[in-house]
Length: 490
Image (cartoon, rainbow, N blue to C red; front, side, top):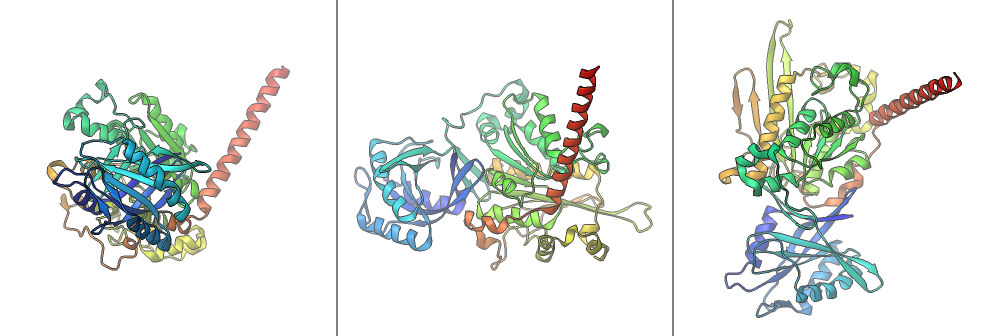
């Protein structure tokens, strides 16, 4: 199991202000977290700080805390079902190791925290350059706890910033293949980008383009989640797909295609034939540092919206909307929109990217009933199918811009949602980038596993496609075995 920690930018700023002192002394405090349990990684989502009051700690020499401060912390954690983080600063930059005093303090705290909360102690250290380091203290045997370094600490807000553990995710060396890319923003930023874990949900026209773009930007760890297979009707929009690829799962096809390029020798791609609403897809998604929402139905959008806030994973979403003229003599309108959701940004619901009533409709299973679909209004989203490869290409480009802006934040600028009007050629950016005060998605901030099993359900469409594919595979295998027997007999 791998480990990580995530916090919002506002939490990061509050901790930096308290811990990095003008007098150069070390300082400490406690914070609280919820667990986010993924497929391969467990992340502590920090969502509340409890700063020391007068007399709670001594900052002269080696910083220390008194028992009353710890009692307040454990009581609050027990009452509110939180895990506990012990946080202190070091007067040096970069990812920090642990001193003898650090180890002694956290070794003393680990069993008490586990006994009170049932959760492991998380220790964090902050360097003077706002680089975080973190570790989980896991019970290995009675009265014995071992520390496990987190591979990264994620800070999420208008910008996405990660601090990496060099032992677990070492800096990369970039060859001739990425010479031009590195020359645009330097090796330090390229190292930040290349070590990200990026998930794409939906490997259709936009998702396949994003997969290509991310790989060629240097991302080495990709997760593809999509239960659908390639059909003839996809061939005008699905990157590199041909008639020979009909019937293949989209995730398998794109994984194999990207691996075959050899552009990144140690490229890792996890391809899942699942829906985001299924446990396998959901847990793989929350293993990621950033997600791309390339779905066209309300339920997966709603789930990704919830994930982005509950698990502090920024999610880049977008969509294409086109209409022909009634007489089919030309296009009437076309627009595409891209935006980033998550902490300190607007959610998809407040951007009207889905309707709650349509989410409920899909959850009920009615959107899989042909007779029910037939009775829906002609302008209902379920009847929409217009799209053009060029428009998907433009949307993918706009989403990659959102991604790079989020990571690089050049000159301190960031931008919110953008919409391109194809007819007029204008780009509109006059959108709100904060949720309304009573937004229920925003209320999920930092909830992590608390919402997990509310999101999980069976996906009838996914199960049908996998069942059909499995049946075809068995038939093909039986045919091959029969041919082999005939050949052996001859």
